[in-house]
Structure formats: structure tokens, C-alpha cells
Length: 240
Image (cartoon, rainbow, N blue to C red; front, side, top):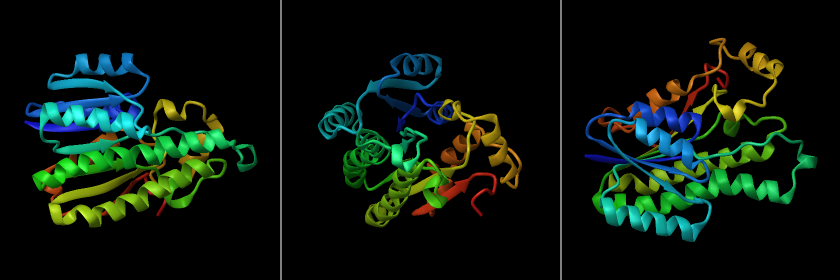
């Protein structure tokens, strides 16, 4: 049985990934912070073995304790999929220090923490798959989302470094870089903004969570065993 951790499983993309990986032979560990109801509901509707843990992944000590408990119980972690992240639209002049810290901690520090503790287990087992969900804004930048873009850019660079570091231990590390996806994170975007993105997207639509989930499923499979250190755009051609 493969043990797969999905961080940020209560979000639209994380939820879709969990449903895609709901197969016999998989055990899904669903991580979230505040939305326990959504995670519990998701877990109840999965056919495969699953469990729910709540944790502030940006808190180093909390994350260490969580992963100590998970590894003690399940021994081996086969894959980590991280879809953690928050977004806030604001002019740079209006970004407060607290907002900056919140976005960077949620989008970058959380990934540092979980990678530190999961990779230790994967190194011992000489195998593992890590997939981070980033954003096309981490590559091209987004007006009024400078801190969000910076946090995703930091995640991209981090992933490339970790891929080189962990490759000798037979651990694959890749990044999925979505464009605008139809999730609750983007519910506050105006219809005008969404239409503008669609107009600039060669495939002339926004993405679906299932588009991302399909790619993630491939990247943690043995079919992708020779792929590592890649930032794979899934944005309908927006960033090309």
C-alpha cells in the first residue's frame, strides 16, 4: 500500500487530487489547517483508506510533531503532494507586514517545513515522489499580487534545489504550475478579469481542478520515474 500525503487537501485542487488518487492500494493522508469539516467530508467519501490531520504547517514545531506522529504510525511515506497556499490581491503600497508574513509563511515556509520532515523519511527508504502546486504567477508575475507571485517564485527555486539534493536518493521532485483554475480561491475575481485571462490564454478557457489532478497522478507514478526538477506549466499556453 502506498502512503500519500496531500497537504492543502481542503482546497479545490487538493480535493480534486484526493479524488483522483482514490484507488485501491493507496492510503491518503489529508492535511489541512482550519477547514476540518471539508476534510472530514472528503475522507468519508473516499473509498480507499484515508485519515485527516490538522496542523499549522507554517509552524515548525507543530509540523515536526505532526510528521513524527505520521511516520511513527505509517513508517514509509511514498509521495508528498503539496497544494498549500493563500492569495491576496493588493497594491504593493497597501500590503502590510502581517499580510506579507502570512502569505510567505503559508506559501513558502509551510513547504520548507513539510519537505524537511518528509524527505528525511524518503532518504532512509531511498525512494519517494514530491510534487508542489505552484502558480504561473511565480514565473511571470502578477500585478497586485506581488507577494503571492514572490512566494510561488521562491517555491519554484526551492523545488529545483531540492530536486538536485534528493536525486541521489531516488527521489523525484517536480512542480506543477497552474494558470487560472476554477476554484474558490479565485471566487473574488471579477468577470472582467477572468475574461481577460481567457482572452490571453491560447486554449481560450480557464483550467479545471481535474486538469491539475491528472498531471499530478502521472508525476507520482512510475511512468514519470525519469522526470525530476521540472516546473511544468498547465495554463492553457498562457505563459509560453
